[in-house]
Amino acid sequence: MRLKLLLLCGIFFVVIFLVGVFIEIFLFGEKTCGDGTPNGLCSSSAPFFCDRGVLVPKASVCGCPSSLKQEGDFCVSKYHTSPQKVNFSYVLDGKWKSLEFVVYEGVLQYFKEKRKKASLSDEKNVSRADFKLGIINDSLQRELVLPLVMEIRNLDKDRIDQLRIAVSLVQNLAYNESRERISVRGNEFSSFRFPYEVLYFGQGVCGERVNLLALLLRELGYGVAVLYYPEEDHEALGIKCSVEHSINGSGYCFVETTGPSIISSEENYYLGLGKLSSTPEIYVLFEGDSLENVREFADADEFDSILRKIREEGKITRWQKLKFERLKKRYGLDKIY
Image 1 (spheres, rainbow, N blue to C red):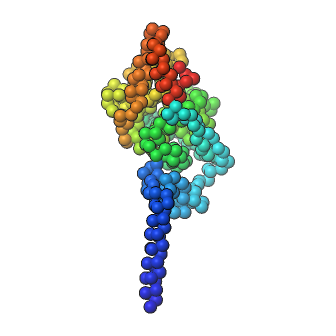
Image 2: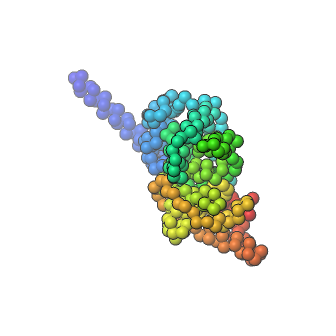
Image 3: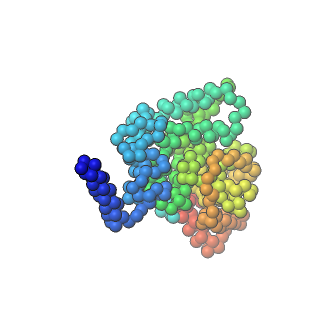
């Protein structure tokens, strides 16, 4: 009798669950989140849960990564102290928008210690790729930046638009060197910042911003590389793409990170340098998806063609001017050209 009662109770709860799922689908539709997680399930990235098409932290259900501890529905560390909100600007389809993100002052001490260890290291002949991977691949940093990635995914379910938001966000940060100095084998340099610190301060130089964008795009599933121009000592990001639009047939498209620019556009001019002329060294950081058949390729070709004509001839036709202004608005280039 007792066994029969337990069986009936089990059936009852299953029926209630199925009715709940049916009502959810009937009222709100069967939704997936921006990372492809079906509604009502945990994302592959803990502690996020897909709730009616929105990724939300739900550690009580989805758990926490090993580097963090659970506090209610959130995953935290001892460095999660002195929170403050920051806003990042980005442009998508000609419309300026902003994204709010919470950063923690306590985390700065963690990266200060990490930087000290890196600067005191006796390792020699470390490749550029290995050095950058050491900065990007910090496990705690990944968990600290993941909420920003999820916010980007919540803004737009289209994966290409997610990439566009990430690129524009990094391009529109301020350009400034760190005021902190470090000494390496008797030589003094400006200290490098970790990607999380670039977000915290809202600023960084070319290599630091490349690291941040590489981290964001890796989490969004794209293949990325570093493009290093030795003569100009400049870094840009390479995103895996169709060969015909890539740098020197490398399979990686040029992405400038120090200011607004169209993906694959190579007509950028730099203060004191002019146009990049050296052949870039390419260091693959992460494998992932390739960018194929996007409007940026045609737009960049058109934009670069008009820009070259302006620089060479000093004038363009009325029709070219209209197209030039349209492209500037679409990619947030109004204040640059």
